[in-house]
Image 1 (tube, helix red, strand yellow):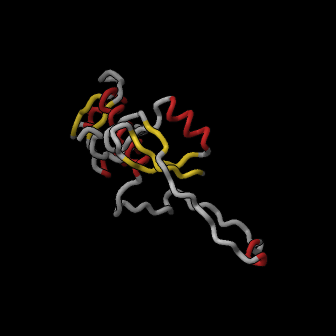
Image 2: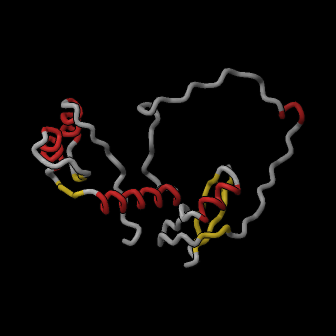
Image 3: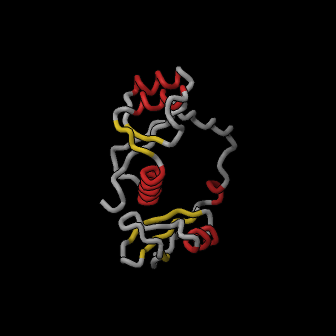
Length: 158
């Protein structure tokens, strides 16, 4: 992974992580890299200081073989929201929110009941979003109605 300091045409600076320089170039050319502050897709790499690693003694260069640790299951992997979200993640969540708002109907606190009506064929099937308690979401899942929860971050323009 490569870490780049990025800057949009509105002069907002932010970080980005990419597989390689080609991934950045392709993503930026396609408009997939955008500023988390203003949403501008005219993004370029900013001037960065090189990362210079410290020399290690030869004995320390080859760590002892140990079995790899198993990856934690999603339920066991704690997620902290105490600090700010990384800029690229915030930008992606803001884009996802914009897509949901653009393509789905907001049904507010009637989410669970509207999902049931659609499931029973009493209402047209369509994308909806709104609010549901944890108990309501669990009851929907028990009834075989698939629902998902996404982090609802402030709009990019707000």
